[in-house]
Structures are given as structure tokens and as C-alpha cells.
Amino acid sequence: RRVLFRSQSISGDFEKRTISVANIIKINGIEDELQQLFSEIGEVEAVRLKPGHKDTLYGFIQFRKEEDAKLSIEKFNGFVFHGLKLSD
Image (tube, rainbow, N blue to C red):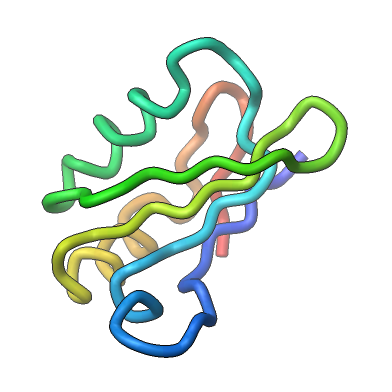
């Protein structure tokens, strides 16, 4: 299973500072883990999770700075998170 990892295509400033991640495994504390992981790049303003397919979640990671969102895609492309490979 692959995790889709890309800039979110929503208009405005939110678009430039937000990435989307699909196929996040449903486990207790995953929102905090995502916050901690992406905070390695820069300040994370919000982590939002929505139901995905089967036992997965779909997430939005919003950074304070646009450049941090871009850098997170570069850094975490190919990163294995709870057995799922993050990719763009």
C-alpha cells in the first residue's frame, strides 16, 4: 500500500502551506505522531484527519510557512511510516 503525498489543491494561502497524505493507518495517537513527524521540518499549525478507504485515514498537514510544506514533501518522499511508504 502506498501513501499519496502531495500539495493540496485548494485555492488561497491554505493551498501553499498544506500537504495531503492518504492511506494513513488508523491507530490511537496517529494525529500526534503526524504532528511530531512533520514538526521536524517546521511549525505545524494543524493536522486534520478524515476517513479514508477501509482501515485508513486521509490527512491534511498545514504548515505555518509555504517553504516548510514544500520541504516536507522532499524530505518524506519514500519515508516508511507505520509500514506504509510515503510518496508523491
